[in-house]
Picture (tube, rainbow, N blue to C red):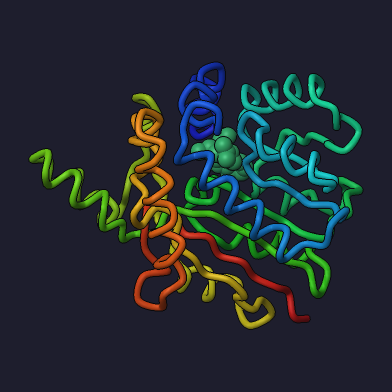
Length: 269
Ligand SMILES: C[S@@+](CC[C@H](N)C(=O)[O-])C[C@H]1O[C@@H](n2cnc3c(N)ncnc32)[C@H](O)[C@@H]1O
């Protein structure tokens, strides 16, 4: 399973930034900024954070620039290579360590890796590639100290705007794809099974030792990331949508839905 995911992301690693870097996609820029603010709220400045699914390393470099020390990990060798190059070219190479492993391997090998972290984060859905959150729980139980936080950005089942867009385009099957029992990810033609996860799934999987301390929608009013590049032409509209989104994204009725949701948990014991 990990190898299917790794192969899919290896194949797109050289062009991932063309769609998903903050520089080219204003929605990605807005989402990344909000994730950094959440990490800054929950993880003390200067602390050491494990990143699960670092992709090409944008968040590792950005957060190292904000004073964190990062252990960036990813299951895809291609992504790890991009991260390595990006970190080497940055001003904070000393603050980032890179580990080519997925969640399952990290959980299985944690004691032998000799790593110590204060917090964990995962941005833009690496955890949706895991068919169960059990390996994540095992990893957190070993890696996260009491009081430490997890900040995870995942794809939930309900994304009202995505449903509306696909219905408007006459694609009802695509509109309902998040509700399938066995959803399949399609990364540029490479398909592998995946799961959509919400706050309830995380609450159940992590158990009472982890208290959910933040829940917010990312992508309620702002379009799904794949549609984001087009908004570069209308920056005022983008700013207005972001304002509306920030006003609505924590309302109890709305905060668990959207293109992504941000969930933060603190370890209680
Ligand atoms: C959509 S990308 C997000 C990358 C990055 N976090 C970002 O914000 O751009 C998903 C990444 O998660 C990685 N990934 C998928 N499953 C993973 C797993 N089980 N453990 C670690 N990384 C994983 C993929 O290789 C890919 O780099």
